[in-house]
Image 1 (cartoon, helix red, strand yellow):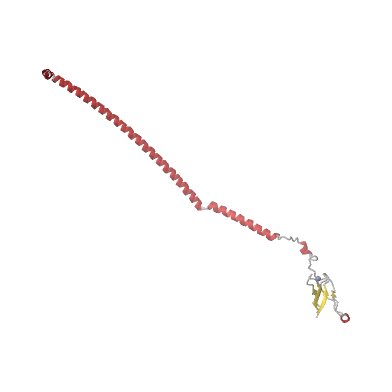
Image 2 (cartoon, rainbow, N blue to C red):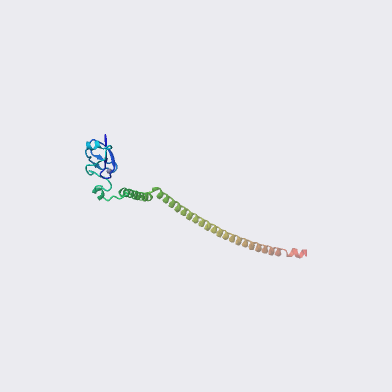
Length: 191
Ligand SMILES: [Zn+2]
């Protein structure tokens, strides 16, 4: 059989078993002992009146009656500690990522090889171009030398031809003189 009790703290009506054990209020969690029933009073009343608690709450963990230690510690509605841990973790991750990226960027072997290869190819191209320019200059000089020699040879040839012409004309003159020396009798005879 149950009895009707009233919570001494929040005055909630509770139907509790009549076994003499203290009752815990389901609304405010108040634990209170019960007054023993008065059998006489029950007998004269048509409906049993609610039994008031025999004593105050033994334990009242409501917001108003929370123990001082829980109130003493500053409880922020925002969970600061986990957020702090998460933020520190993110910052640490970013730091590690940045340092790692820098190390990877500096120590990357392919990049250095690529740069060295490109620089070597560029220097090789410059050297080849210088060699080609030198060769072209040498060819030009050789051509100019050949032209100069050819001009000298032509001049010599022309000089020889001129000398030959002079010799020929002298020979012609001498031949004519000789013919003149030989002719007079014939000429005089013909004329
Ligand atoms: Zn209560």
